[in-house]
Length: 374
Image (cartoon, rainbow, N blue to C red):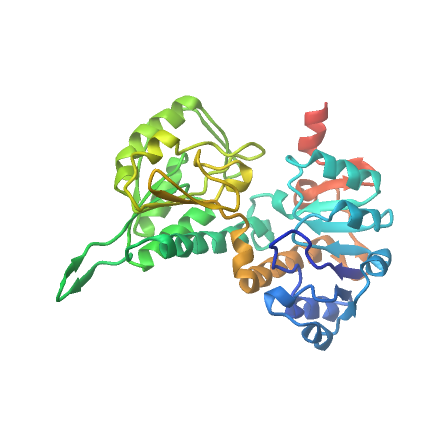
């Protein structure tokens, strides 16, 4: 089976879908791997490293795609790339099908079978394939480092001959993979950390990492597959009331809250930003889905009411070497689950296949999209 790895075209994207190490693993299983020239350079993987791993390197994208059976990417292929694919080609990448109906339609019309890495079921068998978790783990770490670099003070308690420096206070919205890694990172740096989450069951995880959990007594939260699917206005109102004291004391606030298939909820309004300390910092990790802070701006650092608000998207790409290594392992585990060197298994009723297959044989097949169109 022929695997093609494309160079990412999204602005600012530095990751690559396969590293030389994972490509070598595929080759040992009998797959062949061809890499678009320069695809790994921004992640510190040279063309020569891929060649030494047993890959071919192609300078021409159209010939690479015309011969490929399986195309792997981080981000979804562009329209021009899809046009180069022959019917029956398989694509594995992030697709975010709920937000990209036009892309899904184009993939189906081209006869491409597409699998979305962001649709991986939250089941134990799929943990090693869960790219959202592997990338969010890195993003949670980087959010703390990014926030700390914009603060005018240090994180840890420091006792000096000139006096004592009190530790910074960090408030984190959301205790998913990114939020928990942010807790762990901020604690390692010596901060006092508080966390709020719509799922009360995350309290134990937060406390095990040394954070303080802010409890909100309210109904109106629906959780599905480990993610919040719906959050009521009543809950958001009570959460706002519960966290305002902590928000006013915080030096750094990190927001990670997403709702599956919907715009990110606004958790920090302009009114609340005005309550924050002069010089405090907000890192809005949900900015690509509309943002958790009302004043966030995509891919910009802005200062509003004396508060620095960071809206950088794609944080995993800023740690491209590690992010590529982890994503490539997710890809390897996923593809070896779906296929052998001789081709795809096409186990259509199998839970992982059913959860991630978006288009197949000219049709949109993902259950959530079929229900939406019913």
